[in-house]
Image (tube, rainbow, N blue to C red):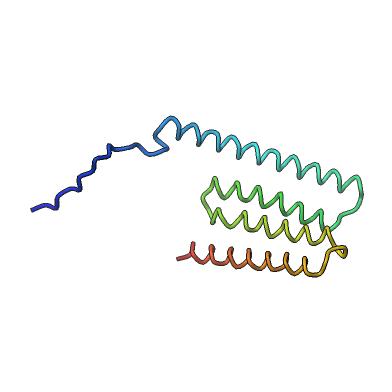
Length: 136
């Protein structure tokens, strides 16, 4: 005797990707990602021009270029499916906080440096946990 099928009162609902609304959201998402990628490349180019005009490279400039690189990397991971997508925003946050510490420099209160360093440590642990969870 075969197992009885569960009885449901709900009609079969197509998945989001099959509906017109789902396709529209996917299209908007892809357009926005292309727009973000274009803006990021433009901003990185503007930063390179700025560094060239100043004839000086600061640590803050290098960290800003890392931010741009990580945004492009995050978009690439989204499209290729290689890697853990959620780790890239954490890397971006770590780099942004490090850049903030560098820019504020010696004018910042010592306890604020500890708070921001603690935030970097917390984000690093979160990235480690997510990368280990992906491996399992």
